[in-house]
Length: 332
Ligand code: SF4
Image (cartoon, rainbow, N blue to C red; front, side):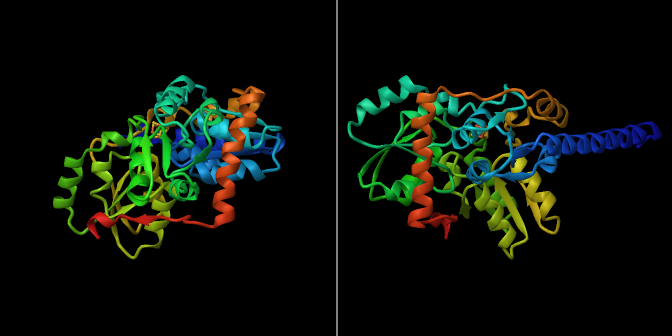
């Protein structure tokens, strides 16, 4: 590295550290809590008060005493925080941060889909708008989707919008008939079955772990399937040393940073969700300072959508059903 380049890296690092301190100071002054999804850039994760997946962050949003919730994630996550803490001001630093999967279904699409399966309750993945949640019966996350579906009396279920997760639930709950909407995560679906087969041949000693948002042809090839938090916990607790993670790059980077003694890698091309990378230290500071962009939800939608999330939390807490990972039986 030339002296000039080395100096510019040092300058950039000290600028970041200074900004990091300013964000912390400003957040304390305004009684703001920073919630950050694990797919965010590492620098944004490092400045956060809490880092986690959507379920963990939803619960934090519900219990915090902060006046301001600053959500570094995508739009539906900030909306979910607002649903759980309607009296609080919830900010999304960069309003461009939407979720393409959540955008694959709107209320009319859901109504049309429901009309095909009269009487079947609707389970909506948390990756959906507040309006779609309001039109559903119960919400779920990738951590508790199996529990939620098992908790319903009906044999016939509607599951929206993610077909990867829907198929994973169907695989684990074969006694029900899950009618699955045709939505998917463009980032997780970049991972192909042939790439996983190649990795298996090239790295026979590595454990392959997959998020259920992947194409079922991909998660069927994994040794372990679980939500973001389940993947993290599985690798943390495993005695294994080599892992191939089939999920978004932010999770991979975080696990690499937290467990340097393990050999963690992923597939090519790198599964990266551009919508998760809009937030930066710079726009985070400005968002707290100027209090933008505030998330608002019409009251009628808020009340109904909140009820679907409350039902989900009640199922998880009351029944104490499955709350951890499910090992993939395909290759065991
Ligand atoms: S990774 Fe997939 S599900 Fe998550 S925000 Fe990006 S597009 Fe949506």
